[in-house]
Image (cartoon, rainbow, N blue to C red):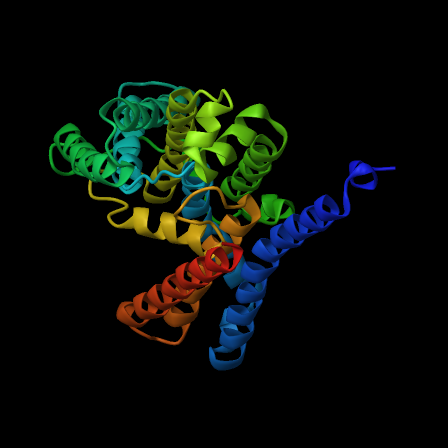
Length: 334
């Protein structure tokens, strides 16, 4: 016997509907991913469908998807973080700077991730204390953090010695082909499982959905809304810090101009994956699939020799469609 066996008929219908909606939010983006893949497999050169290109797509997805995991938690809570791209750039500078000073690679990476967590908590504290919309607050910190990164790197880049950090997203050498994909991709998938578990099985996860669904009701039910908001932004900052370490791995230097506009790709991955900018809705699986959709569009356009503008038009159209579908779903529920 299950809990549904003791529920009223109305509750059973509601439970089934919620379960079906959860599946739809994953299956919808998955269907979109398969559609994009089949489309480019037909119209793009044969090189698009090769295993090597698919591994390249996964490597390129890892950075955006890792940061998007944190953005998922933030958006589910009803917030948003426009400073993610600037934060990634600053983390690359911090990691390179620590390596220059002779810090072990693990310490340098941990330092960069810690900076991300502190900056995320800073964003959350501003949103909570100032009682200003997160869009405005993080728009300000977007410029602030980019300025700090440029000053720290003397408006340029910070060189760093080559370490194992450079191999996180590098092509696998012949002796490590058994890994199938680079370590950074496996790390992204591991973090996806952790975040999914946090949202589904922990009290914090339940509170995140409660705050995003209805902040006033959550407060009346005893949820510490301020603490939840600071916590989700801190989690988002930590995961953005990991994405910053991956970005450093890809570049090999600290670059204060890196990841310009990447915050839009990160937010788009969550929205395309079924997350709602109104809060209370989103899934880790959908977010990862959303990031894959954008990367696959980029790869397919490159394979066909299409311009960056075409890719942006296609991606923008998909985002508008995803937001429109979310609005329609919400209207049908009310």
